[in-house]
Structure formats: C-alpha cells, structure tokens
Length: 112
Length: 114
Image 1 (cartoon, rainbow over the protein chains, first blue to last red):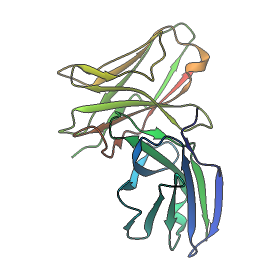
Image 2: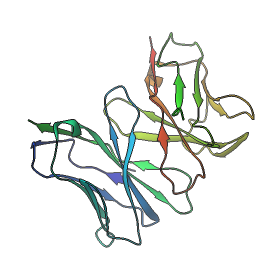
Image 3: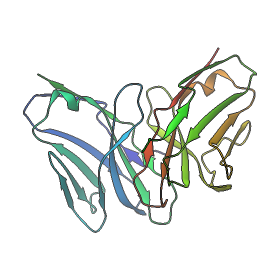
Image 4: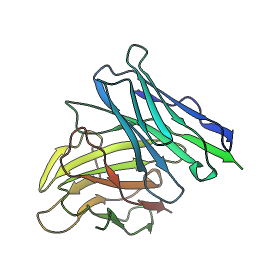
C-alpha cells in the first residue's frame, strides 16, 4: 500500500530552466509534507516543508505547492543548476503519527 | 555540531551471522528513527525510539530485528541470522522534538549479505 507516490522515476532538464517534481498521496491524515534531496552514498538532506494549513512555501530557488483537494504536492526548482542533480524524495506525516512515509524518489538530472 | 553519525558505513555478513548497526544522533536530539532502503525503492520506516523507549516499531519485521536506544551510548539496530533479503541501506535519523518535525539523517550503513 504505497501511500505516497512519485510517479516519475526520472526527470531531465536544462540548466537555467524550471524543474517540477510531483508527488501524490492517498492518506487524508497526512498534514505535514517534506522534500528531501539525496546524493549517492549519502543520507537524505532536508530541503523544504509545508504544513496542510498552507498551499505554498518558498525558500530561495525552491517552492513547494500543496493541493489538498487533489492530494498532490509539487516541488519547483528555478533556475535549475547542475548541482541540483540528485534523487528527490517526497515524504509525509500525520499529526498523530510518529514517522515519515516516503515516496519512491525521482532522479533529477540537470544538464549544463 | 556534528551531524548524525552512523557506523560502520559498509558491513558485509554471511547468511546466518548477526549484524549490528550503530547510530549516534545529533547533540541534543533524543528522538531516533531507523529507515531501510531496498534497491530501487524509497525509504521505509522501521522503528522510532526515544531514549530507552520504543515508541513505534510497526515497521520492524516480526522476527530477527530489534532496536535499542540506551540512556548512554548510541542507538543499535540488530539483525540476527541475516538473510540475503536483508541487504539494503539502513539510515538513522534524529530530531529534537519528534512528531511533525524535519529529521536529520546519517549517511547510512550499507549491509551486504553474502
């Protein structure tokens, strides 16, 4: 039962353009969402988060959008840089829960 | 302020042996989580501990796996009688307050079972 899904295993964009990574969830109890970035042989690194009371959160080049009615969130990176090439994981938690549920990840490649 | 420290980075075991994975959380963090990443998959929750207490172990396999977080020392994930299917990257994460807070992850232990 995959409660958090990232349907695109990979995404390739040109440097300077926008990267849009998508994530869908099924559990209505989720109310806190995070994006993590992971390089090979390293642990995930926190990138940005959003709570269910908001529909947008911005931090520099990174913006997360949340559409609660569609149970969908997306991460926008603009402009994309080659150093952004990594696996991006979407994760969710419920206020009554104790752990994060992760999606399968999307490999982003930003070409110079 | 050192990050979450995991050791060893790589661990090779033969089938039937025991594997012990260690995790030292960030300074001031009393909440520890273990996640497992199988090849080509996302991270799966295993267990959540808070100093000497297991809060949630709903993601732990029923047999052979155990975890502890003693008052002094690192958290330990122990896998007895390892099988090839246990081969995975095991990540530890910590947080200061727990629920609904971002986690800080270690670099993981890559377990290979021969």
